[in-house]
Image (tube, rainbow, N blue to C red; front, side, top):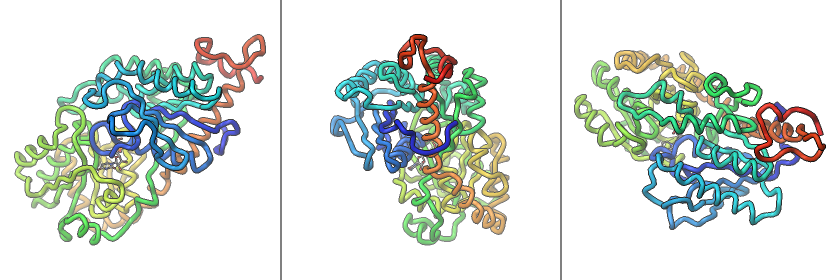
Length: 441
Ligand code: UDP
């Protein structure tokens, strides 16, 4: 891969995020880490002089068609299907309309307006490869999650991802010029499940906004949030859905001796199954810990930083997690994390140094892990001291460096290609994987 830095020909990137706007409040519905990722990396790229235009599906008639998210970062809200009420499962029916919106935008510009397409999640990848063919630019794709991986570790009662998604993901892997994986494990999955060329996959870790997430005064944070200064608080932050497993934390808290902790649940409903906060409220009642559980709606970043600071521990019990931004953000605020040993969480948390990794989701194991830290404030303090330094290795600046290196490699690979007549690089269906690095023009 080429060294980081601004690629010579890279002036403007079209970023595709079909199913969720980077301007949506994360922590509920379909808005989560991907939204944060898209917005933060776009900001970083723009600060280095690369303009970013993010295309997303319009979900409100009240929103302007074009919004400036930050200097050099535009969000284009493409009308594709009804503004409201379209189920995520029905989004594939609107990909044609969305693609038309993206292609029409480019058609209004001078040729070569976008230098590269970066698609996020498979729905965007489907549109990305069409744009790539039409514009003759590279397609870089980030899957964020893979259906096959998700389906292999579903929560009880969770709905498996449909075969159509797996087929779609395979197509995007086949078509993309380069793929971005959050971790080495994810790269290996792209290779083993979808046959990606390992050379084509760049491992780029996501980050956290370290200017926002840093240690602070716990007592002040508790006062601001109206939390008891003396209680031991274990917090869950994220979309409330079976895959994120907030119920695992509730069950563990109920099994801990002496009702030792208060559980703070921050986030809103998303997906199917245990998604309604109401279901979690009912579970807390069944477990007899209603008075030990506090629910907060999704919080904007400044308040969320206070939530992390106010917490003694943050729990991330997910069944599957591509990375887990919450784990990094919490550690950046000086709060140790107890996480399930799945996916990227093994990278995000240093087991025994900045938190604990728990194998599986058994109530006893989770109760034991939490109790081991709750009962040992000295150890907790050691983990808390080490956490920000570990988190400092994950900044969006660093992520943007990785993206730029990947973009540069994608642009250079395209430059390496020639067709027999010696005319410029092939466009459209002429491309076949593996043909690209034949000869330098
Ligand atoms: N988040 C937020 N407010 C909330 C809950 C979550 O801003 O109330 C953000 C959080 O800061 C994090 C993201 O949502 O950046 C969740 O990302 P993560 O990778 O942990 O989970 P995902 O949603 O991608 O599955």
